[in-house]
Length: 370
Image (tube, rainbow, N blue to C red; front, side):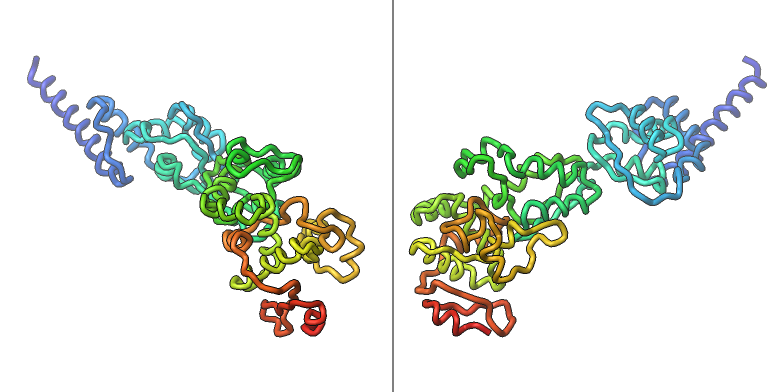
């Protein structure tokens, strides 16, 4: 080999190494170490390609910051993921995405799941986001005393979830079939009843790809876990079924404002229930009157007789057919462990502080009027 050829080859090799080094210096700034599993020639080729495509790599696909859902299905390959990202307008170059995740070994860490991405993210940012499906969650708050329709409205307000309030009502509303494990745990529910009362209030952190059935099961599992074996035993001692306990607790939840009154309110209703007397519970009149925008309307004395519903405890003795809301733990505890008293009546205090005045006789009840 002539001296001239050797000099040319040495110069060419040196230039290639310099290009690779320059690319390395630039690319390592993206926050990842290169994939050590690549052979040297592949590594150099990818370094050079990424270095030359740096402007595209670091440029967002657009200026719209609105997040959109992006789904990686199980067994999706990096090429498929890149093509889907490009199809949704989240990146400009699917091949560049594939080269980037391959060079840094991110391709092995891309996780199946549902993600929230936007056009304003760069390829490196999107690639990093797609390695952690656990960060793509949303929280749904279920408040004590909400009815199932209010939970459905909260679902509709959270536009990140993959199911709607209507989807939710289809699996918890009237005629819905609860999972077998749940009925085995707490007993059979009335035929055709909804799951009202058993959707435990709490804040739920849900993956974005959670289904309506999955959310339903999470709510039911929380209820099942909070109703301890000892609580079940003690409920049985009161000669009330779990369904009756939950129904009573749902009324207490809607009546009580001050927490320490819950056991006393539960005791009053049990005194009337066992007398027997009609419960005369205002929330049971509100329940059938509720509608979108006003699920718990203000009622008048005339409604006590005019609202024709099996839930109206002014017209019908005993407990309502099913719970009227979803009670929290405090109300469930109050129904199982009521405070004994001689009271048969109570009404809101004239002080407007959320408390109630309690009475044994109707005359005392009238004397407590404002």
